[in-house]
Image (tube, rainbow, N blue to C red; front, side, top):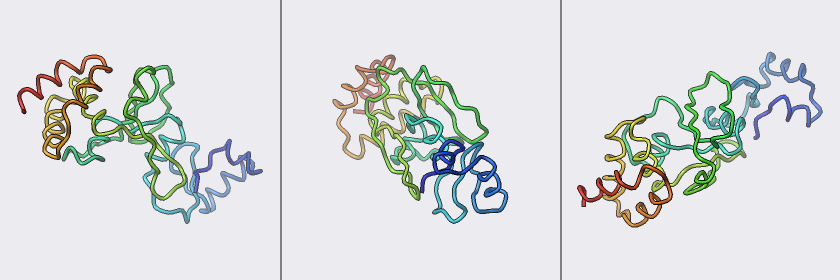
Length: 185
């Protein structure tokens, strides 16, 4: 089931006060400011739903993507989500860290995945893009995380040429990635 927002509720013929009354009466559950799910809805990840509802281009990235691809043992404290650099970061109190990525390279290695328990989808960067981004943004997320992810990816049979080809398209990632590959291989 798709989440309800005041705009989607209005499209279904439901007034804002009816929406709030349904939430107050327990028929809807408020998962974030202005986002509701039916109380009997399947279990779902509320941060994923909020990110996808607030920004259609929302894409899981960095530590969160590496964790989803089982390339790190680190459990991210927040959901890392990329949006276009020109987009406004949504207001909210959820555990979401918003990152602005350049529009020209935003779709490189991006795919849509279903959000379990809903009929929504959210973007997710491929393992290769996630590793390259980790090297590119190593000053922000730490220097050990990209190395750990690269080691695991190589152990699984990853092809270094694919990483290098992607790194050539993203700024500040090719040099550190090649240095790490030379050290590890």
